[in-house]
Image 1 (tube, helix red, strand yellow):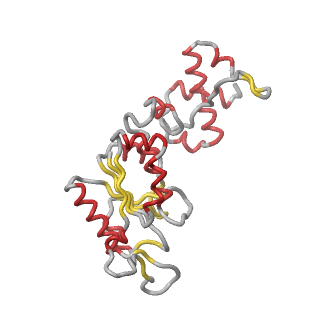
Image 2 (image 1 turned 90 degrees about the vertical axis):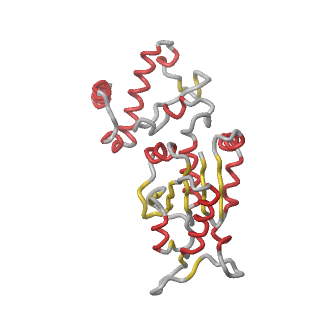
Image 3 (image 1 turned 60 degrees about the vertical axis):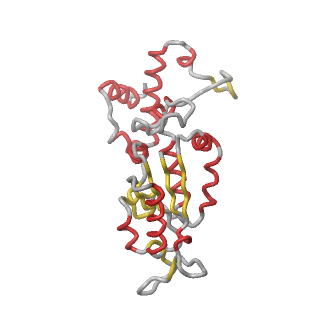
Length: 243
């Protein structure tokens, strides 16, 4: 899968040379291309922003350099289709569902903002607007990294064990169950007996119940949209009864 990032600070994405994503790049499972709008300016200062019409604080990214960067990426891609995403606090909140949908694409283009915001006409150059959350960052680069990682890890071969992506928090709309490893006892806390029983059916039931319990306690809003079976509803009733 190809990831394209329009950013004023491409060096911030050097982190993608390391870890599992670095290995995925080396293996050709993902391709990451960064381009700065400064390449597509016409003045010697490489100006990409200007003061807003009508007055106000801050500076606004001009549409020309961003459009130039997007056109350049289109040429590099040879006409193949991409999906353009504008990273902005005004966008829809990013979720695991977004990551799954993005992971099915051949190419994803993330457009990072800076300064006070975008010229409104930039919005017409993208397919959708997405926000990392209900807060404001200095720019879109941190959001782009988070979305790229959440998406890339769903691609075949990126994780050492592809099943890991299916078992983790939000993969099925719930939070993940508690995990344990050696030693069996640590500071008077023991690994639950069921996990050492070898009974895979009981372990699966315990994990599902604890996933439901954790979601009910920490993110009850997720239960409203999760696809719950009759067995799940029964486990939730046990949890509510203190069992």
